[in-house]
Image (cartoon, rainbow, N blue to C red; front, side):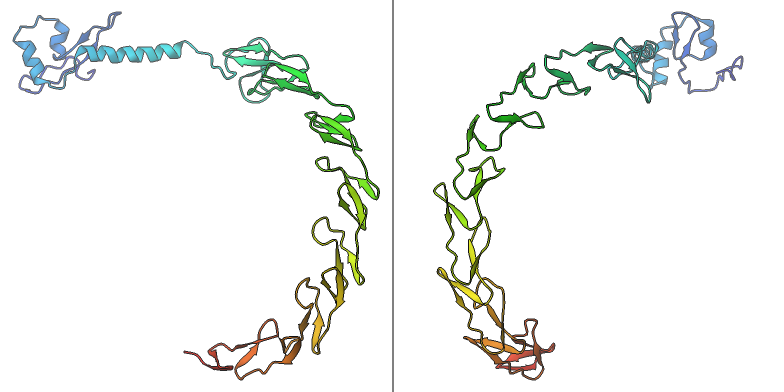
Length: 318
């Protein structure tokens, strides 16, 4: 527009684009639709000119829309002109707060919590302490106390013959006592037994060579050629090497020729040597056919690659 200042208008032009100008002043008068030379003269318009101007520019928007948009823009400018204090520790430092050791902003003092642009004191009950955390209650009960409905701290009741756990959130019976609901009762220790740290069971176990039975420790009957296992579950005794368990006794293992003892707890307790196969209670040499080899166990055979088993022989496969 500045470049066209003072230039004569084109009389032959048929396409007159609407122009929008803001006159300097408080009211910011809008001038639409006419060339600058006509708008500057403020000449009156005839009734015939108005519809022709609107007809020539179908893109002309109503003044109400322009005013609405300018109002929105003015609101945004106003919002930036007047600062709003955030609720996350920014803005001027309030009472009971201090600057952050890193970055910008501030943090509430210990025992206070941010509320808008302020730091309000926490309502910490008796026997509790502030945690300094921004979530949760902001406080926890001290050792030996438990929260009650999130508003107070009550002492944890510890029965006789018990002590508070190191965590401070429960109790445990003294040695020689076991838990029975909310009490600690004396352990009735039978003969040939000793105390354990298992607070959920009887609190005792039998000595080696004895087994618990009806609240007492009875001797374990170990047969000849047997020994104690010291196992809490399963067999209380087992047989020595070279013997196998039958009922309540240990019988010797009958070892055939070309066999050796094994420590398996099931079966005959022996195996055939490599190159021999078991048949009933004996070990017989393996008749290895052509194009075959002993398998991993050494007690049977397999055909070589490219061959397949057929009637005890290895024939070419297809």
